[in-house]
Image (cartoon, rainbow, N blue to C red; front, side):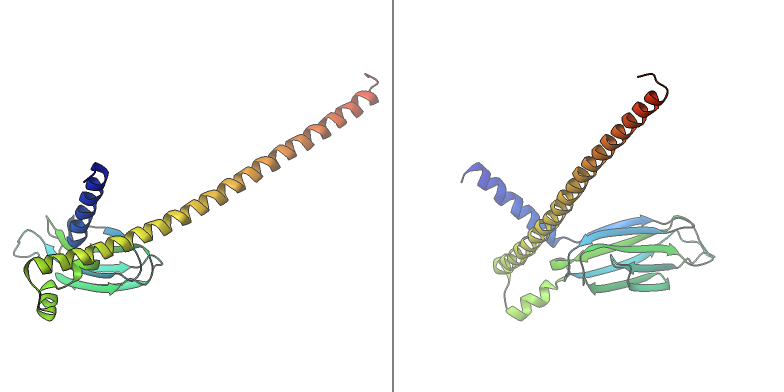
Length: 211
């Protein structure tokens, strides 16, 4: 197999494996203020997340958590308070950055507070055990089914990135055209002002009989 083809195949496999994995993060919570995490997701993608509050055990400290999830256009997709564990799930209706914000909403703040967030998107949200039972597949066949779905997801992501790149190129071309027209207009204004200044100076010098 040629080297470029081998590298392309390896990259595709790595992308497939990465797309199956979930993204788990730890957020160290401040005593006051908000901690947020965002991810850029395309439209029609399933998002599933579990979160849990972790803190140093104190007899008199029982902090609770508030969470708010918003879409790229600011719509609230999930909101809850006075929680220590929770889950949210939705299907994206538009592409963009989806934002999940957490803050301590209890009087008892405690110390060493953090949030464990298990954020899954796309094929990572699939219950492969249920798929295996439903389609009666296992072993290598199941792994190939996962890779097939992963490749489909990668293809959709590539199409999305291509669309975004075309949109950005169009915006860049429009911006360049506007800058060019603005430069021409500025040059024209400068030339007109220079001519008017010259005409004014000539009239002034003739009036003073200097020329």
